[in-house]
Amino acid sequence: MSVILLLYFLILGASCLRINGIDVSSRQNTINWNAVAKTKKFAIIRAGYGKVIDTYWEENYKGAKAAGIKVGAYWYSYAKSVYDAQIEAKSFLKALKGKQLEWPVYYDIEERSIFSLNKQNDIAKRFCDIMQINKYFCGFYSGVAHLASNYNSGVKSKYTIWVAHYGVSKPAYSGDYGVWQTGYGKVTGVNGDCKLDIGLKDFEAIIKNGGYNGFSKGTSTPSNISLI
Image (cartoon, helix red, strand yellow):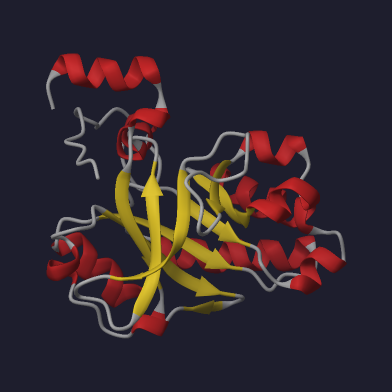
């Protein structure tokens, strides 16, 4: 990328970037990451859920990195209390130990029981705060309906957001978000369908410059960003 083009992106903001990615878990079984790398530039991989590390986390992390795909990670929540969120964050930190991730780490809250307890704000805040204290660039995943009705402005403005909205040209969310989950699709190298994502920010530069996710501060060079 030329210096002029990089400055163009930085001045006009995240909306200029549209980077192809996917998110996967053990549900996809073994993935041919070299095949995936021909069309996708990043992957947000499930590291675990509840207190359990995903059985394919290590394999997926190593395979994606070896294929040159930039990696982020997420943890699926079953927490019903702030204490549960602390335990889940500790499990996530264990899974991430010794690894470097160019994209954010996310907390995935989808269980109806969490929303019915009206605890999602406190739970998300505690989890993300723990990850941030440990130098991870953290955010949370949510559909547009939950973002509008269940999360307060303090939580939404503090952490990066991975928003889900399918079958539309743009998410119906007016706030800031860095990744948009657009729906399901088939990707060469992946068994069956997987979820498709569009990245809207140069997270690799943000994370490396900030010294997050296992990187030393200020290690970034201008990213060679591939657009859709």
